[in-house]
Structures are given as structure tokens and as C-alpha cells.
Length: 444
Image (tube, rainbow, N blue to C red; front, side, top):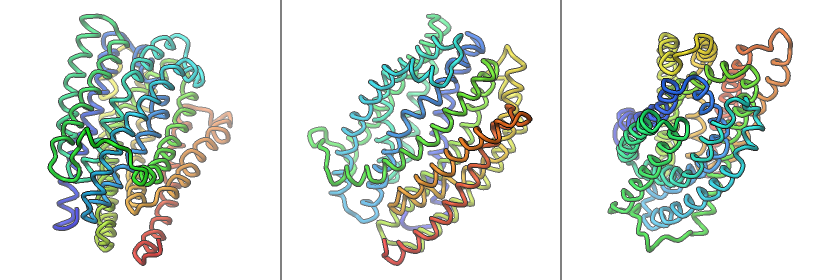
């Protein structure tokens, strides 16, 4: 991250992150594909209806892992192994605490949250089963994400890829066993996901324990450092709030989608899963920007910081345009993998795919800019911008434009995405330029 040919290093670093994200979604897609083929489109809708709530509750805490990664990246850039060690031994217990809290809130609040977004009554029981089992194992998800953030910050993007591959293969195998052979449907899919999450968490912990540098985890040394925790939270909580704002706006949109009925929910859920593949590929450049910027800020190499941002921004734009084109070309065939019993659901999915995939490159550029700002060690401005640009604009769209009778359509609803992405990108770019100049001249 600190030296050598930058573009080559960015690609070498990013590719395993892309593969990790794609594999994670492939294994998640297996949930929808298996229940869709063996249980029907209503089961797809039941699992899909939970995604916005799950993301709303978990993204805040996963956002805190961003703070953990930045603390680690800064210490690596500065060559401070002692600070890095304290970071690792603070991160793991923090992840466990976050996981336990989420389990309590998620399990006890399942019915409330699902009714809050007007989940159709005929899929509500299945959605509740999936959510409760999912949140029962959420601590493992937190440990994996926090641990993987540390590994990526110190330059290791391959280990999370290997761990996810192993746990993901297990997830698919268990899906088939629970759904086809044991015939426990949605509950089986949730159990498969939970078990595989525990496997990935265990593997990440062992990887940290086997390291020979400042990132080595020693169980006996686990202790929360107030200094590290304060910095991690100061960066992570705004990042978590930002992620939650994205999710909150999606909850409102999901509630609106639910008003079109379960067929629309099914088509939108399948489309959302496909869009996820594009998003994780583009978001990989966000993580690259975050960690490359973080290490170079620690080393005070601001010329390289600027080059990192420009090259990652260009990569996100090009990848976004290419991937969006592929999704538009093969959209119907991709949706048919998930949905086999409803042509109308596929038509709903095509509408959503067409609008969002055409503009996904803007989302990629927006995420890279967010990563650059956070890598500078500043996290509140992108949070505020996201509240205004993402959550604010989408809510404004739903309660103004969408309420006009001739625009009260499934199509109009999803135009809120590209509009909010573009406004947010412009605001973030302005803030990044200001913060970069101030950081370079030691003003912040």
C-alpha cells in the first residue's frame, strides 16, 4: 500500500475483496434459489422481505468495524506495532458485545419490525422464523466482519476470501440438506446461514492468532483499550450511522414495495440480490481506498493519497458501467434463476434492474469518495452527507414525487436511487477536496 506501482497494487489488493463479496452473495443467493425452486416464490418473498430490516440493524455495528480497520491501517502506516496490537485486542471483545446486543434486539423485535414495514400477512410467519434464527447467530457475523477488517487493514485480503469460500460451501450443502432432504424450508435456509457464519468467525479468529506481527491475537491479552475504543467509535459510529441511513431509506422503500403485493416483493427481492453482486464489486474499491488511504495518511504520504483516490474512482466508474451493462443484457435470464413460477414477478424484477443497474457506477464512485474521506480519519462529514443525500432525498421522493397519481408507480419508486447517489457524490467530492487540502497542510 505504501510503495511500488500503485495501479497494479490496487488491483491485486482489490480482486480478493471482489471475489469475497461475490462468493458471499452467491452463498446468500443460494438461500433464495433453493427456497425458490423447492418452496416457491412466496418463500423467496419471505426471505427477501427480511433483508432491509436485517441490514438496518446490522449495518450500524458493521460500520463500527470500519473504525477498527482505520485504526489498524493508521498504525501500520506509522509503523506502530504496539498500537496495532492494542487495536486487535480491543476489536474482538467489542465485536462479541455488539453481537450479543443484536441477538437480543433482533430476536425479541422480529414481529414488531416486520409489521412495521407492512410485511404481507401470508409471508409474515416465514419471515419471522428466518429473522429469529438469523439473529440468533449474529455474534459470529460481527466477529467475522471485525476480524476481516483488521486483516484487510494490514494487507491480507486473501484469508477472508478463503474463509468465506469454506463456510459458503458448507452453507450451500446445508441448504440442500435442510430444504430438500429434511424439508424444513425457510427455517433450514436460516440454520444453514447461521452455522456457516460461526465457521467463518472461528477461521478469522484462528488467522489472527497465527500471525507473527502486531496483528497477532493472544486470547489472554484480550482487553478493551479506552484510547483505541474511543478512536474506533469516533470513526466507526458515524460510519455505522451512515450505513444505517442507507438501510433506513431501504426499509421505507421496502415498505412501499410491500404495498404492491407479494409478487412485486418476490421480483424486487430477486432483483435486489442480483444488484448486490454489482454493489459488492464496486464497494471493494471503497475498502481499497479506505485502507490504502489510511496507511498512507499514517505514513504522511499525501501525494500517494491523492493518486489512490483518483485511480480507485476511475476503477469504480469503469467497473460500474461494464457490470451495469452485463446485468441489463442478461437481466431476464438471471431473474429466471430465482423465480420459476411467476412471469409477473420477473417483470417487476426487470423494472427495478433496468433503473438501478444503469446508474450503479455513480454509487461506486460515491462509495470510493466515502472511503477516501474516512481514510483521512474523518467520519462525521460523510455521515451527515448520507443523511441528507441518501435518506433525505429518498424519503422526500417517496412523500412528494411518488405521491403524485401519475407517478405513483413501481418504476418511479426506484428512480430515487440514482437521484440520491448523484447528489451525494457531488457533496462528498466537495468535502473530500476540502479535507484533503487541510490534512495535507496539517490543519486537521
